[in-house]
Length: 326
Ligand SMILES: Nc1ncnc2c1ncn2[C@@H]1O[C@H](COP(=O)(O)OP(=O)(O)OP(=O)(O)O)[C@@H](O)[C@H]1O
Image (tube, protein in one colour):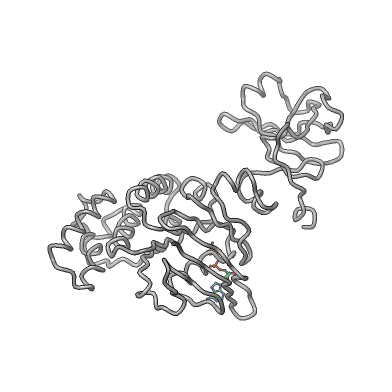
């Protein structure tokens, strides 16, 4: 079983936020809703949570038709970017809150809170106030609070969005490990493709209210359904009007094949272990090529050098439809 989203449409006035969305999110997995800003990710998450309703379509959660159910009857836990914590309550009390309002026995609540604080590595902060935690610790507390009531589904809307890059990365790794331990079906919204690729089992790419593709990170990267997905998950460049990845461009100092495009290196940039070369072809195309530093050194690349570029054998290529019409 899973979360089944069927024929979901949502308009705000005349604006189509979701256009016939059909997707099935598998049980026990970590699924990312990924796409550019304004694409409809949060709207879809809010509809799954019951915080917003669809104009048409159905939401089925683990075999129950949840379309008309209020949020509290859907057994979902959620965490948002700016999570409303109870500032006057300790970390432990915040985590216990959902269990207390459900009137669980005191001993059971104490055990559960202990277990959750251990899980999110906050045991030593149980008696602090949220204001005495770092941003990353607060988000971990929010996750423990959401997990306390044992939701069937955990929904996270850019939960680490407001944090700095390093903490964000730590929390990402931590979320992955946490999920491997508890296996609760989790759906999280992100506009960061690296975050989605690193954390998710499955990614749903959403753009302009439509699902562009659903697949594992590898499937989306290696077999993108269209030029949008190819461009959104990984870097692309254009050569002879065809889209391909910059590391799939073969660069040589002599014309090795007749169809190679001749040009001049206009820029060389070293980024860590990579070298990025910009080649301006004689046809006026700007092609980005990524090489390892060793390879670039072997070729003795320099700005102004004459080179030939072609798609490497086995390169993933795609006609650049949208880029051409843009
Ligand atoms: N309550 C609302 N009233 C009017 N328009 C809305 C409302 N909520 C969302 N929208 C519009 O619907 C579109 C989709 O919004 P949504 O928040 O789902 O996008 P998103 O993909 O989550 O983007 P982001 O990453 O920026 O949060 C946006 O153009 C937004 O302006």
